[in-house]
Amino acid sequence: MPGRSNPTLRQRRLGVELRKMREQAGLGGTELSGLLGVSPSIVTQMESAKIGVSPERVRSIAAACKCSNTPPVDALAKMAVERTKGWWQAYRGALSTSFIEVAEMESYAQGLFTWATTYIPGLLQTRDYASAVFSRITPPLPQHDLENRIEFRLKRQQVISASGVPCTAFIHEAALRMQFGGPKVLASQLESLLVDAERPEISIRVVPFDMHTFLGSGENLMFAMGPVPELDTLQMDISRGVLFFDSPAELNTHRDLFARMDETALPIDQSQDFIRSIKKELDDKYD
Image (cartoon, rainbow, N blue to C red; front, side):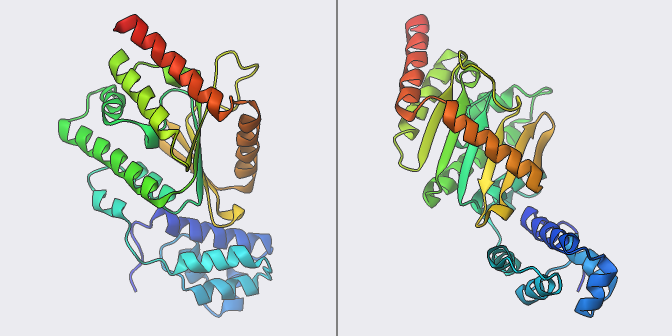
């Protein structure tokens, strides 16, 4: 069977988790290959997601590594049988891999937490606001690329909304005041946030300027909960795309970060009042 030339985010994550399992058992690749009765190259290809892994193989690896933690093994075995192509695959070749992989991560999440410091989270953006965010890029995007990005972002929103996955958005006041597209676009975006805040699966929490501290880094973050904590994923926006993190240290650090945000951000009702007050400022100033 020919190897995969372009494994997906999920396929790579499965390989990473198998490698972690082997390393935690103190086994080298050659040692594990001997226990499985395969060549060392097969172990390397499984861990790099260059070849597929059956659920039976996942369980054999867990047994060889003396891994008795059943829930993660069951979750990995379930990942191994995933064969359906996600809706995002239709955009391969039209958008960068980072866009595709964010949608893939979201679509399998059991819950989402976001931290936004510079702009409204993508899953809550209006069309005009998203257009303004993408239009700021230098050099300017060709029109067809701009439209592809906007449509993809709106499709992500539709999919997550239909799934009912709970989403908590922590939004810094700076992001609420940045006028991408001008005051009218921002006012419409803030009104849209208030509408979204009424949805049962959406929680919007504001972190105002006068909070006693600034939590975390300045990057926009998304924390996607997996079926078990070991399969959680952190995604970070950077200037040239996105980064994904799955190490236990990074996940624990950001679980703590979001727990502290939950303690310090304004409650839901006060957050909605805060958003209304900013919108009123805009209306009074520019109407």
